[in-house]
Length: 591
Image 1 (cartoon, rainbow, N blue to C red):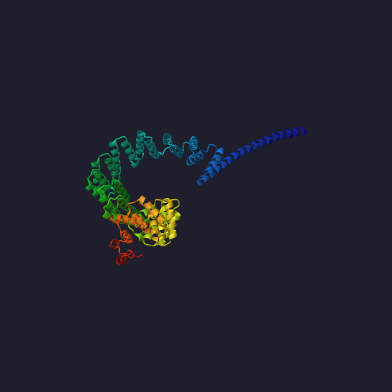
Image 2: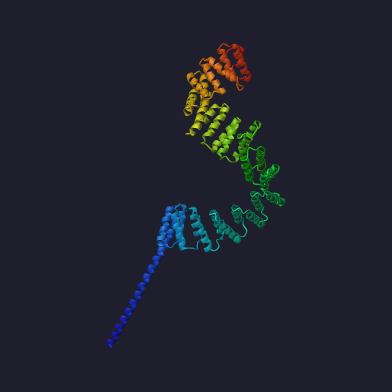
C-alpha cells in the first residue's frame, strides 16, 4: 500500500517535473522571440531617427550633415528608397552628379511606383546634358504610372532638344488627344512644322487654335504672325482686319498691321496704324516701348526721325503714370542728340525734353545710376547749374560713394561761382576716386582752378602738380596752371615751359595761344607775344580778352595808337573787362 502510493507519487512527481520543464522551455523560447522582435523595432526606430535628422538638416541646407544622417539611416535599413531619393536630391544640388545618379537609380530599383523618382532622375541626367537618358526616364514614368500625362509636354520638349521632330510631334499629339486642343502643343507643333518647312501644316495648327478658342483674339494674332513670317502678308492683313471688325479694341492688332505695312513700304498706312495702336490705352505700354526700340534700330531714316519722338510723346499722353514711358522718352531724345538726328535749332529743345523726362522718371525710381548720369550730363551741357546741383545732391543720397557725382556737383557750384562749395565736393570726390586716374586727373584739375579762385595759391599749385603727375599732357591743366602763374608773376620759367609744351601738343587752340603769348609778355618777350596774338585776333572766334592782351603788348612796344584800337575792340565785345574804359581814355595800361 505504501509502496504503491510512493510509486504513484514518484511517477506523478516525474510527470510534473517534465511538464514544468516543458513549460519553462516554452517560456524561454517565447522570451527569445520577444528579444529579437524588440531588436528589430529598435533598429527601425533608430533608422527613423537618423532619417528625421537628415530631413531637418536638409531643410537647414546643412547638406554634409544631412548626407551623414541619411547614410546612417540606410546602414540600419538598407531598403529605404526614400533615403536614397533624399541623397540623390542633395547630390544633385551640390553638383555631385555621379553620386546623384547612383542614388536615384537605387531608389528606383527599390520602388518603381513613385513618380518623383523618375522626375528627379530625368532632371539629373538633363543637368549633365545626357538628354537621351533623361528622355528614357520620362518614357518609363509615362509607361509605369497612370495619371502622369502632364509630363508629356516635358517629354515633347526633350524630343525637340534632341531634334527628333517625329517623336516630338507624336508626343504633342498625345497631349492633344488627352487634354484636347491646347496652346502649348499647337505652338510647339507649329515650330516643328516650320523647321521642317511644312508651312501649310504650321498654318493649320494656328487655325486649329483659332477654331478651338473663337473668343480669344490672341490666337488670331498668332496665326497672322505665322502668315506674315512666311510671305503671306495679304492673308495676314485680311485676318487682322476681319478681327478688328468684330473686336475693334484688340490690343496689339494695329501695331501688328503697322509692321506689315512698313515691310510692304506702305508708309502712310504704317503711320496710321501706329497712331491707332499708340493712342489705345488697352495696348500695353511694353508693347509700345518694344515697337519704338525696334524702329530706333532702323535709324537714320528721315520719316522715323520725325515719327519716333512723337510716338514717345504719345506714350506719355496715354500712360501718364507709368515711369517707363518717361525713361523711354528720355533715352530716345538723348539718343537723337548724341547721334545728331536733329537740326542745330532743335538740339537744345531735345536736350530739355530729355531732361524733363529723366527728371520725372527719377521721382519714381532713383535706383538707376545710368539715368542720373544721362540727366546730369544734359543739365551740365545746358549750363543748368541750379537743377544740376539739386539732382546731383539727390543722386548722392542714392549713391553716396559715386565719385563722379561729386565731380558734377562741384562743377555746377563752380558755374555759380560758389567756389567754397565746389572745393568741398571736389575734395569729397577725390576721397572716393580710388585708383581711377581719369577721375583723379579731373578732380585735381578742378581743385587747381577752384583754389586759385579762392586765392589759395599753394593748394592750387599742389593740385595742378598732382594732376600733371597723373597726366603730364593734360592740356587744360597746362593751360590754366601756366596762365595763373603768369597772372601772379610767379615761377614764370615753369609757366614758360608748360605753355611751350602746350603749343607742341595743340597749336591751333586760341585759348592756348593766348596763354603762351601772355607768358611771353610777362617774361618781357613782347615781339613773340605780338606775333602770336596777332594770329589769335585774326580768327573770327577771338574774344575780348585776346584783343585786350594784344593792346597791352602793343603798349609795351610803344605803339600806343594801335594799342588803343585793340582795347576799343575788346570793349566792343565785353564792356566788363577790368579798367578797359580807363585804358582807352588814358592811353596806357591800368592794372
